[in-house]
Length: 201
Image (cartoon, rainbow, N blue to C red):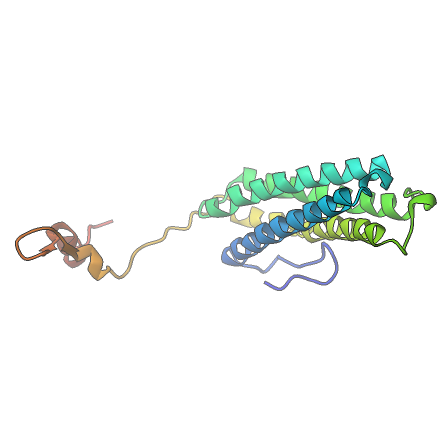
């Protein structure tokens, strides 16, 4: 679904389970992209010998955020394929990601706008502008993850729901097989009989 313009304010109260699963897939891609962009910017700054000009508290926090985003990516990639049977731990894990993302969103704002020393601010330097892009990328990713709290709240309604996928129409490939026999084509009679006389449930 289309998420809201304000971080953390997307309404998931009316969203279906399939909508949530789809959005988790989008989050997975967005986190991967964000990690790659941030790492690429850090590499560029290091190659230009500018990384030593970045305050240690800021650098250390960026490293912490990158570690968290890798963890969040792993969690989401574990959770969304399992949502055919929603469990309490799915809800709890998504809430936790949202909570840490909220802390990062607040802390990054403070680190950049209040704690970044004036002597290191140099808007005329292209390397400093890359540092600013790192700040924006990391904080924006945290803001994007805030909506996981709303997802978790809605997902709680689905705890215990099991989505059973049934095959309504058999594939011709299940019945006709290419085999190394005297004419090259065989019939799988077991599958054919199951299509004609489906088992009783």
